[in-house]
Picture 1: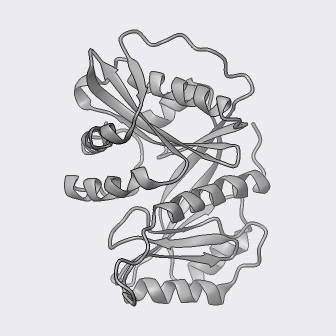
Picture 2: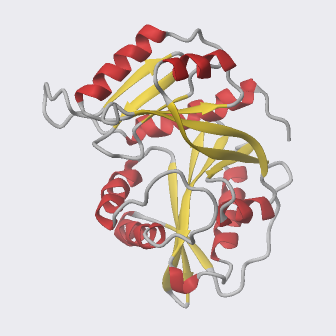
Length: 279
């Protein structure tokens, strides 16, 4: 599968909308440290809370002029919050954007890979033995969050991961607001009736965003992720999607899992940071 800048823009801007959905409106009128969403150069700047992994600027630099003044306003609001600015920049954007960011003091923090799979050939897949997949309703949301936190609190240690691991408390705070994102379908994987893994998919204009998935340590190696991927692909096609996308850290088991299910590497995003505290 070939990715040009138009496809990358479609994917990155869907990611921007997901982050904007996650951002909560200010809880206190006039609270200048509350969450916010700002447009910038065709993308969005999203701030949720101090230290949140959702804090980012994404989707800029494709088919809109790079507005340095708008970025300066974003930077000022981040700086008021003593928060480093994080920009996730596709390698398919205008190279001049990266040069300008470097001149403004941004440094390379890491990379993430964007992979995709066409859904026109997704058919019925054989069930994974002993793994049952169920859609999560309101009554199961707490279990879904607990499984996600347990999985992400004990990663497999493979690959290149740019971010420091979050504490369990930080993970719980991140996940608590996640189920409220519109268009999100949540799944639990069960083995012998016990929650073994979780995943989600978000439908955005015929694009299926394969949201973070995880398996609790004692159930790893039993096909949980295979079953979760198959179910989400099937449901995405049934919902009219033409493409499924997923983002992984380079060289991880997560990347290996999705590539085994037909996903191909489309492009990479550079993670660029401007940290006021470091200067």
